[in-house]
Length: 372
Image (cartoon, rainbow, N blue to C red; front, side, top):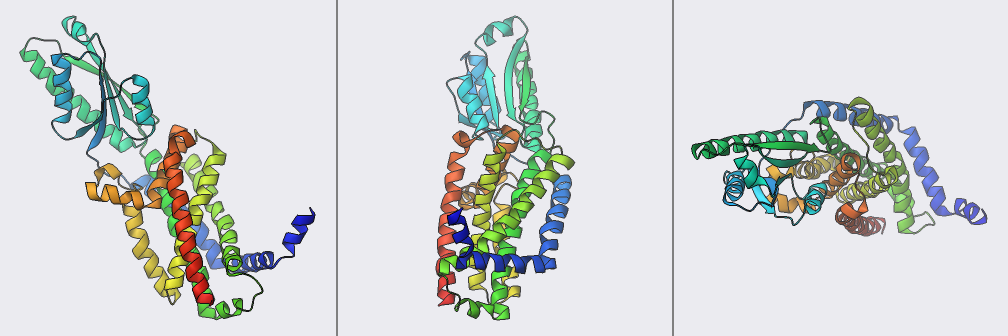
């Protein structure tokens, strides 16, 4: 308690209190934090519906006979499915689908050849249903390929094959379950960068940035005092977006709420750091708004929020790994729809930490140079 009271007497807490008072007096900022996220979530959640291709396929061929190999070849010959993995077990196949490494998994049972002769041949098809649009297309293509292959077998007087399709994580193929988590990341990116940038630039426009030079506090304390209130304020947008997703679109929440909240807070620091970095470069509020749109549009387009990553050219798929929003959207979909934890998402979490450290370091240095 004693140390807590000492914290309240520090210059850092005085700066935080000043920033909170400024935010509460800015009615336009409060409206900006509530109205645009609500409209964007409702609009994109209902309206978006893109197409995809280059679906990642994993196959376990227990039968390993001529007919089964020909069937796998038929699946991959049209380039709709790319054979990415040949797992050793069903558990490994399920794990790869869970981690987002595969879109479709096919299991050809060991009795496949005998079942062909008995006129009841079946294969199991597992489709990642997180992206309802992709899952529906994958199901349609798989059914069409098997049907065409059946005609080939019929010419040899062999009994057709019937696939048993199972949709994972999104059995009803609800498209909004894919788009709403993406729009949540999109909204947080736009709001975090724009609000933080405008807040810092406003100090320049009003001339109060020079007054901060007289503040008896370190440069990092001045910058952190601006970031912390914004982060807490933007966490309200996280709760708002999550509430709209679960109430309006019946979005499931299968993972840990604490993990979701912690990683969302981490991503907010990435967005705020990016906004402050833009503010240190821009000379006015008009410039920073234009710059934020110039930066945010490529971030949104290559993140997988609107169009799936698989639909992009290979070069852009590789470049998207440098996009923090891509990693955050993967985290959100993994926690909400698949219920996975750090054992699956750790690479994306490390990427977010790296982006937060790099952007925060650059922002602090540029902000320090301006104060100097």
